[in-house]
Amino acid sequence: MAMRSLRRALTAASAVSLLALSVTACSDDGSTVRFGYISDYNGASLLAIAEKQGLWDKQGLTPEIKVFTNGPLQIQALGAGDLDFGYIGPGAMWLPATGKAKVVAINTLAYADRVIGRPGIKTIQDLKGKKVGVPEGTSGDMVLNLALQKAGMSVKDIEKVPMDPATVVSAFASGQIDGAGIWYPLIDNIKQQVPDMVEIASTKEWPDSSFPTAFVGGTEVDEALTNKVIKVLQEANDWRAAHPEEAITESAALLKLDPAKVKADAANVQTMTTEDLVNKTKDGTVAKWLNSLGDFFVGTGQLKSRPDPSTYYTGDLYTKAFTK
Image (cartoon, rainbow, N blue to C red; front, side):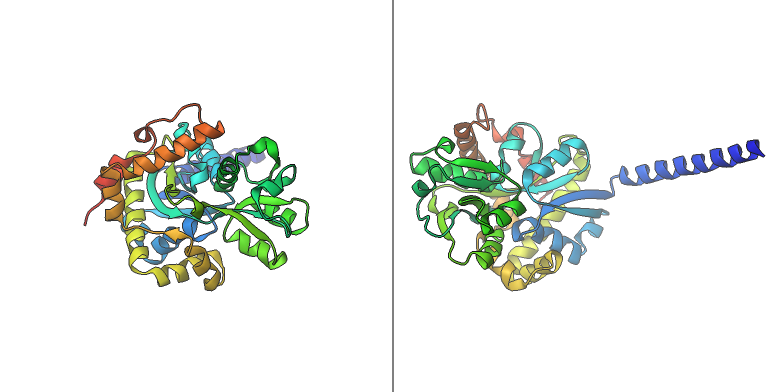
């Protein structure tokens, strides 16, 4: 009796092992793509379009998309092997520059980041010695550093409080922090609770600088798979450029948000056609954007030196994947 039970247990264990192997085989066969995003227009629009327009199917891919609160967390997941691709804002671009990921496609130029203050705080100088919440290593961190530099200040002049984006919203609303480096559409959530909050600084104040958002892949991701994913992103990108209103509707459906909110978020975004992005890759414009960010990150201490963009932006793959 005991022997029969043991045999049954071993048979069951073997079945489970075979099931586990088959699941692993499915996830490693190149057809399933684990893709991270942030729940805003920049992060979600191409994934929403690709799903709706059947662009994944066209490349023989099945997406598994997962929402994250910021870019650094996605790059961490890429490094751990939990994601294949993800989305980052300009403030996280220092991470691929240090070799932790590859930029596979430039997405948009973003101007959604702000330094905000509670009522009565009108300038960056008014934040001296005060608590300022910021998600570290993100574009919120970037705009805070830019604003401090412009005012001849540094992070030593404020009490910087690292916190995740959702906590920034609740801490600002409850008065636990005096200011924040954060972005739209989260600022809209804050405005609902603190309607007389003040926008102290904006990335729009640096018209000579560009703040590219991007899609990133893990350093070990297969080149053939990367090529297919780039094709999906390029086709979705051109659909978005040709159908701006519908792109907002599709994004709102994925994000489960009011389309009016997504439209307001999209107003802070500059989209480009894939042909334009290919040309900007070829003529060195993209490299200039990335070098500008690289210089900034050297200034903040996030990079020791500025690497050549070709070491972390797969512009050759992006260019080769494009067909008119």
